[in-house]
Image 1: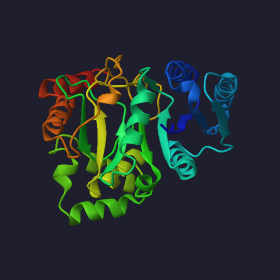
Image 2 (image 1 turned 120 degrees about the vertical axis):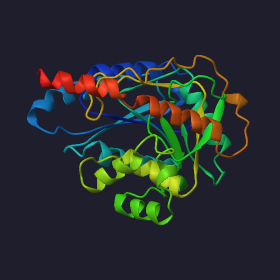
Image 3 (image 1 turned 30 degrees about the vertical axis):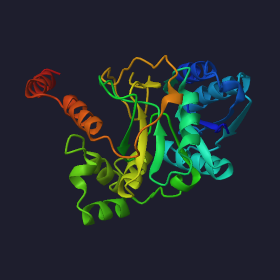
Image 4 (image 1 turned 120 degrees about the horizontal axis):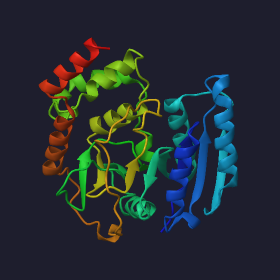
Length: 298
């Protein structure tokens, strides 16, 4: 099996980077995998010290076939850093596994990713492989959902070439094809609002553009029924994530990647369970009232 390179994007959170690296090193394929670490530059002088500490740590790590540190002299921001870094590596190697510095992986993450990348490398209807799945019970061992995702994922050069960076073009095509409700998981999660905010420069989400790019091409992403990835960024330390425990999962501690055998079609029952989970994230009337009252007394 040809192993994919792993690309990790880091910034200034040393404690998170350590957890991400230490978990990744425990993967059975880590010692055979090439690791590329993209370190974004400082937004301002106050970040320089933290970034230097992260880079010093990266230079000291072992446990991989090789470690290549790419130091950005200027701050590109997460979106530009990921888009350019993924493009560079996938164009060179033909496939790529992507992590950010707040994603802790199961020891079987790399096995799952590489197995699926090899298994579906010539399948035209699959956009990517995803390591994280929401804390939803009774999902099948593996399943497909239309679109793409962003918490520990992998793809191939030909699929990444379909990435459309222009959010306005994506929104136009979405409305032209009248796929707004489907894109929003039956209006359970407002991805379109994220796309509109991207156009208005209220966010710079590469992830919503990756999702919409794959969705509009009717491409699928493979998910595991039990997550291989835990996001530890919901501690108010990240750029885009506030504090929350709604996305916490128990990591998959069993290697069943050799059992991937399913029809290449969207699993509508699993999609419905995604919708129910998204609905559960919405604040209830009682919660909204309590929030208003709290604000009145601030």
